[in-house]
Image (cartoon, rainbow, N blue to C red):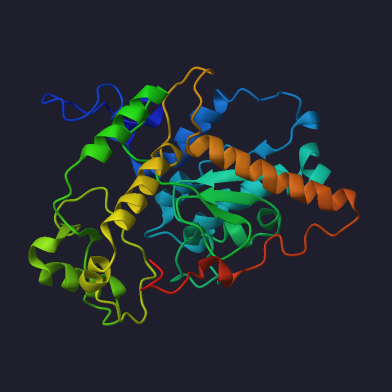
Amino acid sequence: MCPYLDNLSFGPEIENPEDVLMNNSWFLTNQFLLEVIFHNRMKRYECLTNDSSIASAVFVPFYVGLDMSLYLWGFNITERDSASLALVKWLSEKPEWKRMWGRDHFLVAGRIAWDFRRQSDNESDWGSKLRFLPESKNMSMLSIESSSWNNDYAIPYPTCFHPSKDSEIFQWQDRMRRQKRRYLFSFAGAPRPEYQNSIRGKIIDQCLASKNQCKLLDCNYGATNCDNPVNDLGEWKINLNETLLRIPEDRISALREEVIKLIPRVVYAGSRSRSETLEDSFDLAVKGILERIKSVRGMIREGKDSSIGFADGDDYKYTFPPYGDGI
């Protein structure tokens, strides 16, 4: 892990002998270092203050994911929960906590939110119970994958692209627009043969059956940056090849342009001057959490109970429109 802490935790710079990538913008970034990347960026945030009494929010620079990584395998729940219990005890004793009882506090995790939501004290259960601790329920958490609770929010995984100037983003967007697309669709993942209802497995089968229409990046064979979601079980009745072929070319071009427009919003930029105009993942995450805390503060001013719904479970967070003709 230590080599990945270079360059403000972006990792070692990727060698580019054939000029495939833009110089000084691509790094071997480890996805689990998001919390360190975020902290390093926060240190340079232009609105930081040392006076907590005037702060709009309190960022908690606890590397919750890195701590959890040390104890996920082969350790009992006492060891897995130790740092979390110490953290909330320390926070709740601070004067800043009592201002909003922690609802203006937030932290960032470089692991999925479910790693911190162990729902029992059975030794065989996964993860820690950080997010079920009473004090932690009053805080918000930004993580690489969210949960169905209202105080967990998903922010992008760190990519290997960390542009230091807007011009580098514009250059990459232009390159993506000119890129020749040889495949109708692509899929990155690894099969889960132990689960017969795995949607992932059905997509992989369709991808392989489509011959030259689909490009499969098989994460079983050394792909280090594949994301294999845990909860992919369900009913799947879609033929991807037939469905995607029905989409008109002009619609495809419009959809592709929307994805290209998202590039600045899903990367964590390098050091930038204040004259830069684009907002990256960090900017949008901070803006979003400040809006969240502002709304909670407004409820308090109106005499409402800000705890209502703050940390409730909400399965509708994962409700999506039907597939098919709506694409």
